[in-house]
Amino acid sequence: MDRYIGLDAHSSSCTVAVVGPSGKRLQSHVIETNAQILINFLLTIPGNRHLCIEEGTHANWLYEVLSPHVQEMVVARVGESRGPRSDQIDAFDLAEKLRIGAIKTRIYKKRAAFGQLAELSRAYTVLVSDTVRVKNRIKGLYRSRGVNVGGAGVYAPTTREDWLGELPVKARFRAELLYQQCDALSELQHRAEREMLGEARKHAIYRILKTCPGMGRIRTAQMLSVVVTPYRFANKRSFWAYSGLAVVMRSSSDWVRTQDGEWVRAPVQQTRGLNRTCNRTLKAIFKGAATTVIQCAKDEPLYRHYVQLLEGGTKPNLAKLTIARQIASIILSMWRSEEVYDPRKLKQQI
Image 1 (cartoon, rainbow, N blue to C red):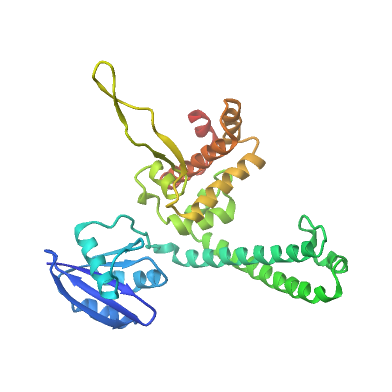
Image 2 (cartoon, rainbow, N blue to C red; image 1 turned 90 degrees about the horizontal axis):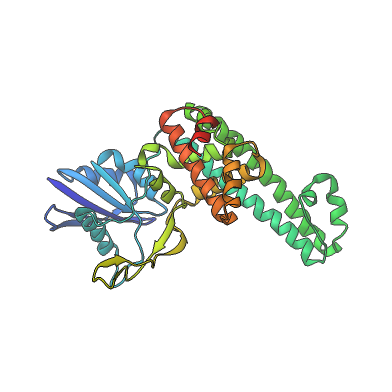
Protein backbone atom coordinates (compact mmCIF):
# COMPACT_ATOMS: atom_id res chain seq x y z
CA MET A 1 0.00 0.00 0.00
CA ASP A 2 1.42 3.38 -1.04
CA ARG A 3 1.36 6.40 1.21
CA TYR A 4 2.04 9.88 -0.14
CA ILE A 5 3.47 12.29 2.40
CA GLY A 6 3.78 16.05 2.15
CA LEU A 7 6.06 17.87 4.57
CA ASP A 8 5.94 21.65 5.03
CA ALA A 9 9.07 22.56 7.01
CA HIS A 10 9.81 25.62 9.13
CA SER A 11 12.54 26.46 11.62
CA SER A 12 10.67 25.19 14.70
CA SER A 13 7.83 23.01 13.38
CA CYS A 14 6.97 20.76 10.45
CA THR A 15 3.47 19.98 9.23
CA VAL A 16 3.17 16.45 7.84
CA ALA A 17 0.18 15.31 5.76
CA VAL A 18 -0.50 11.76 4.54
CA VAL A 19 -2.65 10.85 1.52
CA GLY A 20 -3.67 7.37 0.40
CA PRO A 21 -3.43 5.96 -3.15
CA SER A 22 -7.04 6.97 -3.88
CA GLY A 23 -6.46 10.57 -2.76
CA LYS A 24 -8.14 10.21 0.62
CA ARG A 25 -6.61 12.40 3.31
CA LEU A 26 -5.54 10.04 6.07
CA GLN A 27 -3.86 12.20 8.69
CA SER A 28 -1.92 15.37 9.41
CA HIS A 29 0.31 16.28 12.34
CA VAL A 30 2.48 19.13 13.57
CA ILE A 31 5.92 17.85 14.58
CA GLU A 32 8.99 19.53 16.00
CA THR A 33 11.75 20.21 13.45
CA ASN A 34 13.99 17.50 14.81
CA ALA A 35 15.63 14.76 12.74
CA GLN A 36 14.97 11.86 15.10
CA ILE A 37 11.37 12.86 15.77
CA LEU A 38 10.67 13.13 12.04
CA ILE A 39 12.26 9.74 11.37
CA ASN A 40 10.26 8.11 14.16
CA PHE A 41 7.03 9.52 12.74
CA LEU A 42 7.80 8.30 9.20
CA LEU A 43 8.47 4.82 10.53
CA THR A 44 4.95 4.70 11.99
CA ILE A 45 3.43 5.10 8.52
CA PRO A 46 2.81 1.65 6.98
CA GLY A 47 3.39 0.68 3.35
CA ASN A 48 5.58 2.28 0.71
CA ARG A 49 6.35 5.82 1.78
CA HIS A 50 6.64 8.54 -0.89
CA LEU A 51 7.76 11.85 0.61
CA CYS A 52 7.66 15.31 -0.96
CA ILE A 53 9.16 18.51 0.46
CA GLU A 54 9.63 22.02 -0.90
CA GLU A 55 12.96 23.41 -1.99
CA GLY A 56 14.18 25.77 0.71
CA THR A 57 16.56 26.34 3.60
CA HIS A 58 15.96 22.93 5.18
CA ALA A 59 15.79 20.89 1.95
CA ASN A 60 19.38 19.61 1.90
CA TRP A 61 19.31 18.60 5.55
CA LEU A 62 15.88 16.95 5.32
CA TYR A 63 16.88 14.99 2.22
CA GLU A 64 20.03 13.76 3.93
CA VAL A 65 18.31 12.55 7.10
CA LEU A 66 14.95 11.34 5.73
CA SER A 67 15.70 9.80 2.32
CA PRO A 68 17.07 6.52 3.81
CA HIS A 69 13.69 5.91 5.50
CA VAL A 70 11.36 6.29 2.51
CA GLN A 71 11.03 4.50 -0.81
CA GLU A 72 10.93 7.79 -2.74
CA MET A 73 11.79 11.35 -1.78
CA VAL A 74 11.15 14.33 -4.03
CA VAL A 75 12.26 17.92 -3.54
CA ALA A 76 9.90 20.15 -5.51
CA ARG A 77 10.24 23.70 -6.69
CA VAL A 78 6.87 25.20 -5.86
CA GLY A 79 5.75 28.45 -7.43
CA GLU A 80 3.80 31.18 -5.74
CA SER A 81 0.38 29.80 -4.87
CA ARG A 82 -2.91 31.66 -5.04
CA GLY A 83 -5.91 31.40 -2.76
CA PRO A 84 -6.03 30.30 0.87
CA ARG A 85 -2.77 29.07 2.37
CA SER A 86 -1.72 27.36 5.56
CA ASP A 87 0.89 24.82 6.60
CA GLN A 88 -1.68 22.02 6.47
CA ILE A 89 -2.99 23.06 3.05
CA ASP A 90 0.55 23.25 1.67
CA ALA A 91 1.47 19.83 3.09
CA PHE A 92 -1.62 18.14 1.64
CA ASP A 93 -1.01 19.92 -1.66
CA LEU A 94 2.53 18.49 -1.85
CA ALA A 95 1.28 14.99 -1.07
CA GLU A 96 -1.50 15.21 -3.68
CA LYS A 97 0.81 16.55 -6.40
CA LEU A 98 3.22 13.70 -5.72
CA ARG A 99 0.37 11.18 -5.92
CA ILE A 100 -0.93 12.34 -9.29
CA GLY A 101 2.50 13.16 -10.76
CA ALA A 102 1.84 16.89 -11.02
CA ILE A 103 5.25 18.09 -9.80
CA LYS A 104 6.76 19.96 -12.75
CA THR A 105 10.26 20.67 -11.43
CA ARG A 106 12.17 18.25 -9.22
CA ILE A 107 15.37 19.41 -7.54
CA TYR A 108 18.24 16.93 -7.56
CA LYS A 109 19.67 16.61 -4.03
CA LYS A 110 21.61 13.37 -4.09
CA ARG A 111 25.31 14.20 -3.61
CA ALA A 112 26.69 10.67 -3.07
CA ALA A 113 30.50 10.80 -2.87
CA PHE A 114 30.57 14.50 -3.70
CA GLY A 115 28.84 15.71 -0.53
CA GLN A 116 32.00 17.09 1.08
CA LEU A 117 33.11 18.66 -2.20
CA ALA A 118 29.73 20.38 -2.52
CA GLU A 119 30.10 22.00 0.91
CA LEU A 120 33.65 23.16 0.16
CA SER A 121 32.57 24.50 -3.21
CA ARG A 122 29.80 26.55 -1.60
CA ALA A 123 32.24 27.94 0.94
CA TYR A 124 34.68 28.94 -1.81
CA THR A 125 31.94 30.55 -3.91
CA VAL A 126 30.66 32.61 -0.97
CA LEU A 127 34.15 33.81 -0.07
CA VAL A 128 34.90 34.81 -3.65
CA SER A 129 31.65 36.79 -3.75
CA ASP A 130 32.43 38.50 -0.43
CA THR A 131 35.98 39.36 -1.55
CA VAL A 132 34.74 40.92 -4.78
CA ARG A 133 32.13 42.90 -2.86
CA VAL A 134 34.74 44.37 -0.47
CA LYS A 135 37.08 45.23 -3.36
CA ASN A 136 34.24 47.06 -5.08
CA ARG A 137 33.60 48.99 -1.88
CA ILE A 138 37.25 50.03 -1.73
CA LYS A 139 37.17 51.32 -5.29
CA GLY A 140 33.81 52.95 -4.64
CA LEU A 141 35.29 54.82 -1.68
CA TYR A 142 38.11 56.23 -3.79
CA ARG A 143 35.81 57.19 -6.65
CA SER A 144 33.41 58.92 -4.24
CA ARG A 145 36.35 61.19 -3.31
CA GLY A 146 37.23 61.97 -6.90
CA VAL A 147 40.21 59.58 -7.06
CA ASN A 148 40.46 57.71 -10.37
CA VAL A 149 41.28 54.03 -9.70
CA GLY A 150 41.65 51.14 -12.12
CA GLY A 151 43.11 47.66 -12.14
CA ALA A 152 44.20 45.66 -9.10
CA GLY A 153 47.05 47.92 -7.98
CA VAL A 154 44.87 49.69 -5.43
CA TYR A 155 44.66 46.46 -3.39
CA ALA A 156 48.42 45.72 -3.29
CA PRO A 157 49.94 46.07 0.22
CA THR A 158 53.06 47.74 -1.20
CA THR A 159 51.15 50.68 -2.68
CA ARG A 160 48.38 51.15 -0.13
CA GLU A 161 50.04 54.02 1.70
CA ASP A 162 50.27 55.97 -1.52
CA TRP A 163 46.61 55.34 -2.29
CA LEU A 164 45.55 56.23 1.26
CA GLY A 165 47.36 59.52 0.86
CA GLU A 166 44.91 60.42 -1.89
CA LEU A 167 42.01 60.33 0.57
CA PRO A 168 41.01 62.98 3.10
CA VAL A 169 42.08 62.19 6.67
CA LYS A 170 38.47 61.58 7.78
CA ALA A 171 38.01 58.82 5.15
CA ARG A 172 41.29 56.95 5.70
CA PHE A 173 40.18 54.94 8.75
CA ARG A 174 37.24 53.54 6.80
CA ALA A 175 39.58 52.58 3.95
CA GLU A 176 41.99 50.88 6.38
CA LEU A 177 39.15 48.77 7.80
CA LEU A 178 38.09 47.74 4.30
CA TYR A 179 41.68 46.78 3.48
CA GLN A 180 41.87 44.63 6.62
CA GLN A 181 38.58 42.96 5.70
CA CYS A 182 39.85 42.35 2.16
CA ASP A 183 43.07 40.75 3.45
CA ALA A 184 41.17 38.45 5.82
CA LEU A 185 38.72 37.37 3.14
CA SER A 186 41.51 36.78 0.60
CA GLU A 187 43.31 34.51 3.05
CA LEU A 188 40.11 32.56 3.75
CA GLN A 189 39.42 32.32 0.02
CA HIS A 190 42.84 30.79 -0.65
CA ARG A 191 42.33 28.35 2.20
CA ALA A 192 38.91 27.33 0.89
CA GLU A 193 40.39 26.89 -2.59
CA ARG A 194 43.12 24.58 -1.25
CA GLU A 195 40.59 22.49 0.68
CA MET A 196 38.21 22.27 -2.29
CA LEU A 197 40.93 21.21 -4.74
CA GLY A 198 42.34 18.72 -2.23
CA GLU A 199 38.93 17.08 -1.91
CA ALA A 200 38.42 17.11 -5.70
CA ARG A 201 41.72 15.29 -6.28
CA LYS A 202 40.36 12.32 -4.34
CA HIS A 203 38.05 11.57 -7.27
CA ALA A 204 39.62 9.98 -10.34
CA ILE A 205 37.13 11.64 -12.71
CA TYR A 206 38.44 15.07 -11.65
CA ARG A 207 41.82 14.44 -13.26
CA ILE A 208 40.07 13.43 -16.49
CA LEU A 209 37.59 16.30 -16.76
CA LYS A 210 40.04 19.09 -15.97
CA THR A 211 41.82 18.35 -19.28
CA CYS A 212 38.84 19.83 -21.14
CA PRO A 213 39.69 23.23 -22.68
CA GLY A 214 38.66 26.20 -20.57
CA MET A 215 37.68 24.20 -17.50
CA GLY A 216 40.77 24.13 -15.31
CA ARG A 217 40.96 23.02 -11.70
CA ILE A 218 38.43 25.28 -9.99
CA ARG A 219 35.66 25.08 -12.57
CA THR A 220 35.99 21.29 -12.74
CA ALA A 221 35.79 20.94 -8.95
CA GLN A 222 32.70 23.17 -8.80
CA MET A 223 31.04 21.33 -11.69
CA LEU A 224 31.56 17.91 -10.08
CA SER A 225 29.71 18.97 -6.94
CA VAL A 226 26.75 20.22 -8.98
CA VAL A 227 26.36 17.54 -11.68
CA VAL A 228 27.35 14.54 -9.49
CA THR A 229 26.67 12.02 -12.28
CA PRO A 230 26.35 12.42 -16.07
CA TYR A 231 23.63 9.78 -16.22
CA ARG A 232 21.09 12.23 -14.82
CA PHE A 233 20.75 13.60 -18.35
CA ALA A 234 19.30 11.69 -21.28
CA ASN A 235 21.30 13.65 -23.86
CA LYS A 236 23.35 16.77 -24.37
CA ARG A 237 20.28 18.95 -24.99
CA SER A 238 18.82 18.21 -21.58
CA PHE A 239 22.25 19.03 -20.12
CA TRP A 240 22.25 22.34 -22.03
CA ALA A 241 18.83 23.18 -20.60
CA TYR A 242 19.96 22.39 -17.04
CA SER A 243 23.05 24.56 -17.60
CA GLY A 244 21.06 27.52 -18.90
CA LEU A 245 22.34 27.17 -22.47
CA ALA A 246 19.06 26.23 -24.18
CA VAL A 247 17.41 28.77 -26.48
CA VAL A 248 13.74 29.42 -25.68
CA MET A 249 11.44 29.58 -28.72
CA ARG A 250 7.89 30.92 -28.56
CA SER A 251 5.15 30.79 -31.17
CA SER A 252 1.43 31.30 -31.50
CA SER A 253 -1.08 30.64 -34.30
CA ASP A 254 1.30 28.08 -35.78
CA TRP A 255 -0.84 26.92 -38.73
CA VAL A 256 -2.10 28.77 -41.79
CA ARG A 257 -4.15 27.56 -44.74
CA THR A 258 -2.64 27.78 -48.25
CA GLN A 259 -4.54 28.61 -51.43
CA ASP A 260 -4.84 24.86 -52.04
CA GLY A 261 -6.64 24.44 -48.76
CA GLU A 262 -3.76 22.66 -46.98
CA TRP A 263 -2.59 23.52 -43.50
CA VAL A 264 1.12 24.40 -43.25
CA ARG A 265 3.22 25.59 -40.35
CA ALA A 266 3.65 29.36 -40.33
CA PRO A 267 7.11 30.92 -39.80
CA VAL A 268 6.09 32.59 -36.55
CA GLN A 269 8.61 31.18 -34.07
CA GLN A 270 10.53 33.86 -32.19
CA THR A 271 13.61 33.58 -30.01
CA ARG A 272 13.19 34.59 -26.38
CA GLY A 273 16.78 34.24 -25.19
CA LEU A 274 18.18 31.48 -22.99
CA ASN A 275 16.12 29.50 -20.51
CA ARG A 276 16.04 31.06 -17.06
CA THR A 277 15.07 27.96 -15.11
CA CYS A 278 18.55 26.51 -14.79
CA ASN A 279 21.51 26.00 -12.50
CA ARG A 280 23.26 29.38 -12.32
CA THR A 281 26.54 27.89 -11.18
CA LEU A 282 26.81 25.61 -14.21
CA LYS A 283 25.87 28.44 -16.54
CA ALA A 284 28.68 30.61 -15.14
CA ILE A 285 31.14 27.69 -15.37
CA PHE A 286 30.52 26.86 -19.03
CA LYS A 287 30.26 30.47 -20.22
CA GLY A 288 33.44 31.26 -18.30
CA ALA A 289 35.15 28.25 -19.91
CA ALA A 290 34.07 29.52 -23.34
CA THR A 291 35.54 32.94 -22.54
CA THR A 292 38.84 31.33 -21.53
CA VAL A 293 39.00 29.34 -24.78
CA ILE A 294 38.28 32.44 -26.86
CA GLN A 295 40.87 34.58 -25.08
CA CYS A 296 43.64 32.13 -24.19
CA ALA A 297 43.43 28.96 -26.32
CA LYS A 298 44.17 30.10 -29.86
CA ASP A 299 45.52 26.68 -30.87
CA GLU A 300 42.38 24.76 -29.89
CA PRO A 301 39.87 23.46 -32.49
CA LEU A 302 37.18 25.14 -30.41
CA TYR A 303 38.76 28.55 -30.99
CA ARG A 304 39.11 27.92 -34.71
CA HIS A 305 35.44 26.97 -34.79
CA TYR A 306 34.63 30.22 -33.01
CA VAL A 307 36.53 32.16 -35.68
CA GLN A 308 34.68 30.26 -38.42
CA LEU A 309 31.36 31.18 -36.86
CA LEU A 310 32.30 34.86 -36.78
CA GLU A 311 33.48 34.75 -40.39
CA GLY A 312 30.16 33.13 -41.34
CA GLY A 313 28.24 36.10 -39.93
CA THR A 314 27.29 34.71 -36.50
CA LYS A 315 27.08 37.34 -33.79
CA PRO A 316 29.88 37.12 -31.17
CA ASN A 317 27.49 36.38 -28.30
CA LEU A 318 25.84 33.52 -30.20
CA ALA A 319 29.23 32.16 -31.28
CA LYS A 320 30.33 32.19 -27.64
CA LEU A 321 27.14 30.36 -26.69
CA THR A 322 27.94 27.70 -29.29
CA ILE A 323 31.40 27.19 -27.78
CA ALA A 324 29.90 26.94 -24.28
CA ARG A 325 27.49 24.27 -25.52
CA GLN A 326 30.34 22.34 -27.13
CA ILE A 327 32.33 22.42 -23.89
CA ALA A 328 29.29 21.11 -21.98
CA SER A 329 28.87 18.33 -24.55
CA ILE A 330 32.57 17.43 -24.33
CA ILE A 331 32.38 17.25 -20.53
CA LEU A 332 29.34 14.98 -20.69
CA SER A 333 31.02 12.67 -23.21
CA MET A 334 34.34 12.55 -21.32
CA TRP A 335 32.56 11.78 -18.06
CA ARG A 336 30.58 8.91 -19.53
CA SER A 337 33.51 7.38 -21.41
CA GLU A 338 36.06 8.27 -18.68
CA GLU A 339 38.55 9.34 -21.37
CA VAL A 340 40.76 12.42 -21.32
CA TYR A 341 40.24 15.21 -23.82
CA ASP A 342 41.46 14.42 -27.34
CA PRO A 343 41.44 17.43 -29.71
CA ARG A 344 41.74 15.12 -32.74
CA LYS A 345 38.27 13.68 -32.10
CA LEU A 346 36.81 17.14 -31.76
CA LYS A 347 38.53 18.32 -34.94
CA GLN A 348 36.89 15.49 -36.87
CA GLN A 349 33.44 16.46 -35.59
CA ILE A 350 33.91 20.16 -36.37
